[in-house]
Image (tube, rainbow, N blue to C red; front, side):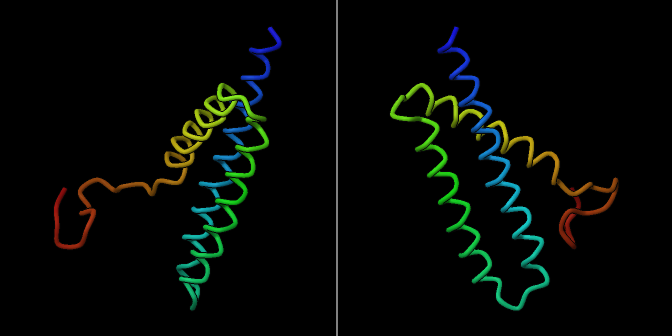
Length: 102
């Protein structure tokens, strides 16, 4: 029972790490659209997000591969949710790329 609880906590931690990582990526992309220094924003964001994610994986796993796998699974689930939540709505009949029809 305790092991199951530990794995559930690792899964939840992975979801939170993924939300920070992919939510931060979404925020960075929106910020870069109005910035004069996009490369600096992308590099700084990548370094910060990767440091948080890798450090979080290290702390959550605590040397146990099962906790690491659970955390990674939560991270992937979070990626799916953030992707769905931040997707731009597609208008019917409007081309995805100018000059092309879907």
